[in-house]
Length: 291
Image (cartoon, rainbow, N blue to C red; front, side, top):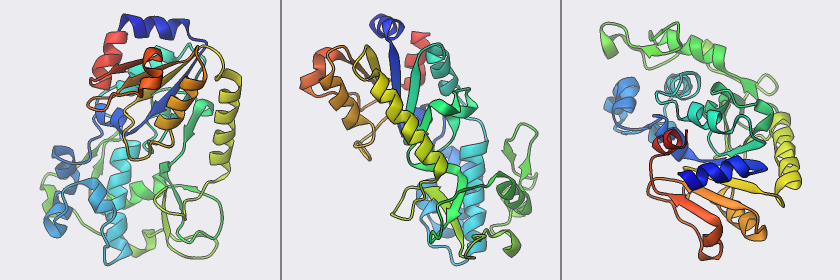
């Protein structure tokens, strides 16, 4: 911990690479009690046991599809994470020359205070919709529509944004939304879908390209200096976005340091072992120790 802290203090820049493990450390789990708290009715009816599976289920109607997705969106995008791991990370780097590259789509960085102009969400955003075709390269904010869908299912949205069941529990909860709330593309009329990179229909809108440009500018200015590649919770699903480039850029710069914090998956190639520190531990606990 002392060595990592010293490295961060003396670095000219810090590039954070964040994967799903960071949000898992923050309490954004997609199965178990958190899933059952909000989706017990869907689990009982359809037999899936986690949010990811429910997101790919072939619902018979768009009304039921959006009942599921509206719950998914509001708890994973608009509710705060139960554990302040993102806040701990922000305190660690807020006075540094930092940039964030992330495959996460839950918006936790901005909610924790990170500068929007220093973020590149490569895989989309739970808070955005796009045309399912797509007929044009534009995305749309969904918060107001999602909140309407939630209220139509008889959930209660508290003043702090949290979601609560009525007193009678799931007995009073609906599993559909009104047809007039089903989103359709304002240009072609086709159904809208999530702005998430799951196939070749993913829309890279103007904001996405601007963020990609800022990320490239940050690398061009800092990759040859005393830069720390701080990788947090990145697994093996999409290693070509963060992990492999971080390894390659560390190898290319003898002044660079690669720091990986990832419970169960903290490893590094032998070629950059002397430039690396790997911490096999929970991210929140590690960041708390660094503070």
